[in-house]
Image (cartoon, rainbow, N blue to C red):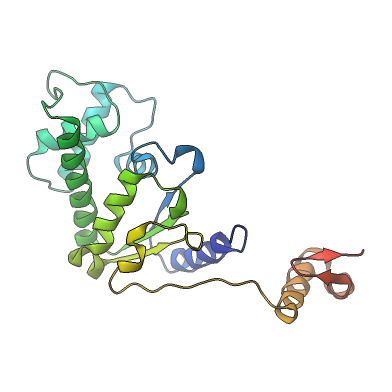
Length: 224
């Protein structure tokens, strides 16, 4: 359900991971970009490549080249050209546009992105948080399925995904070695405990007890 606490739960998990010096990578999906190919992955990859949106084509391709070399990817010129297209950078004489059909370009980019994730997995554990699958564009969804289905990545990655019940991608139920946690609303007793706990942090214990007793409906509705 919307607002049931998926984000709050996984963000608490992230806080624990960060406290243990784990690097967490986040893919966040938004409804307004549900038809924009690879939108959440482009944001993530810009962070990895250190490629701000205002970066020019020459500097942009130079940064991409450095990143490709840091991962020791083969056919580096092709990789730079593909990632340049992925980031919508204008081509340069050193990295001209590849003569590919749109379908072939999508396939090459998808294969390259999968290789990037696998190389990062080989260099260290990957903790990937993917929020709101129900708003994910089809291109990102297809690649994510390849990521969670890859045996090598499963050995080096922890992938946590959130979605609304019944609105996730069709492949979600077929992921092997995956575990699904269905969130349900808190009962009255636990809700009152949470109100008392959070209220104590904000208003003090005395006022918190008074407020928690005044809660008459769940989700919360207070008469004071």
